[in-house]
Length: 395
Image 1 (cartoon, rainbow, N blue to C red):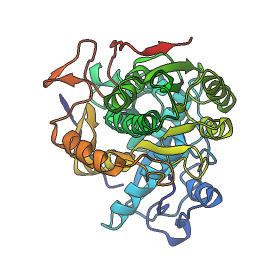
Image 2 (image 1 turned 180 degrees about the vertical axis):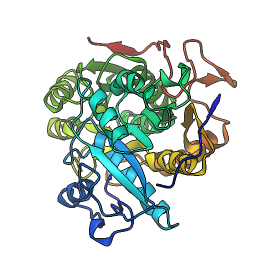
Image 3 (image 1 turned 30 degrees about the vertical axis):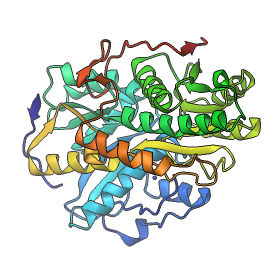
Image 4 (image 1 turned 135 degrees about the vertical axis):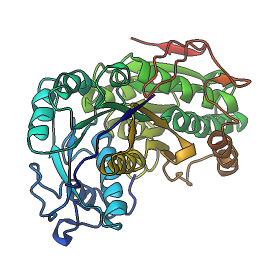
């Protein structure tokens, strides 16, 4: 289903990126490979849309759960925002970004309303917990497009100006699981592990469909190359709690998990895995610089793909889908650079084959012979009730 959107006035892993807020050179910064440079790039524009982008700029709201120094969850959205700005600015499309940092579920309603009143015609809510408040506000501003990133309710409401967007990150999770599984199997084949010791630990934020689908995809990938692999899942109870995530990773390592992965918002599980002497795969951004002796690879959503798409749709007065979801077919999901000091032999070749199969649809993470497995439901952030033998929830 698509929604028709009325014609409107034109009104941050460590890769090279630009922070471009419109067309002004004093608001641009080259992102280097060190953490300090990344933090500088994340926060270059004002929190009240103060960048001097000139006339004719589209005002876009950007509501974040983290702050400028967050180099994981929030940074991945900011990186996508910045990359989209670079591409659009090169075509003469100027964007004035109105940022709101450190927003939580108690303040996101006010943030959405403030941005709409400030003249934003497109507002991205970058945490699923913001969706309910976003929907409460959206009816008051019918000429503003409100997007819930990784949400699931906007696709089914009656408002023509509310939208869900996510990506098939389960594809990236599956591939990261393959990387982890190949490493475990290499250790088994080399006699360093007994087959039953190929145990994965997974730090999950919440016991909810988004996290369950993610760790299930990861486990399916790992088990496809390491048939004896099992998984233990420890939930922290919060999307972002660095101390709880670190403690969960330490606990999992103490239980014999030889690889730690995560669906959580901080770098702390990577650092804990390295300190505990086990391997790690990450989420949202490249975590190898934070844990070079542990982290094998990460997977991330490239949000620039959707941000560019949505901005073009609003500017062109065309159709902005109620429920947008793409993966490797649109390059909206990717793996970060492999840690070549640690990965198993043959990892590159295996990944190349699997990426191609995911992109052309011949491989589907939750399908057998082309049919979806029971318990899997499509959507921007799918409902998910699939349970796989070999996965143990610890809490």
